[in-house]
Image (cartoon, rainbow, N blue to C red; front, top):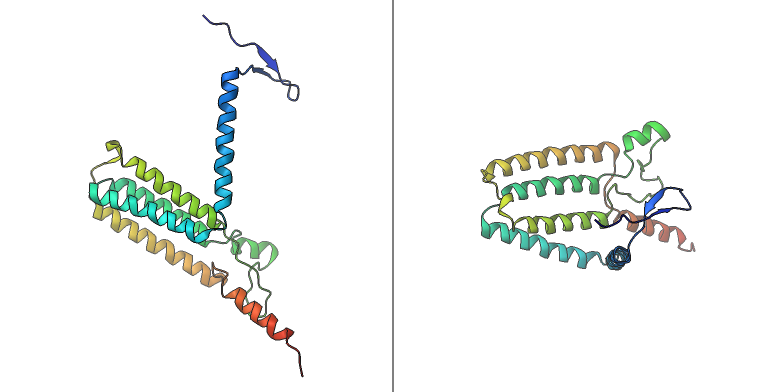
Length: 205
């Protein structure tokens, strides 16, 4: 029986911890290096919106094609659809709910044309939306390689239920947009604001 590793007292916390072997230290350093490189690659892709979504389209097409050819994994697809719907709601919703903000500090979104332009801040930023949905499709592709997830089910019922859920959710979201007068996109507003500033800066003869 091998002797236990001697305990080491942490100078900052005073808590006794087990001494880490050189092999474990090397593994931890390797994991940290891989994670830092992974984060570096993600940071470099942040400004490249179109290439990122093209890459996602390729991943989504591979999954759809695989499910079509296998004629199965409808439960996985249904779960993926529910998850995408949840992400979409976060992507279309403001970071601060106008109903709560109006009651606390007054309107946080412009409600008149003369109000100052305020960019729409999403509850789920575009990059996180893209990252989450891409990872979800990658996980779904991996799941299609295991027959344990291929549960027999009458898929038209799942499709009908998802369409109804999507319709009700989007109807509620659109009603929320109309009630608090916001649009979850900034283009158009910025151009209008810029054109107004240019017109006011023109010299008067």
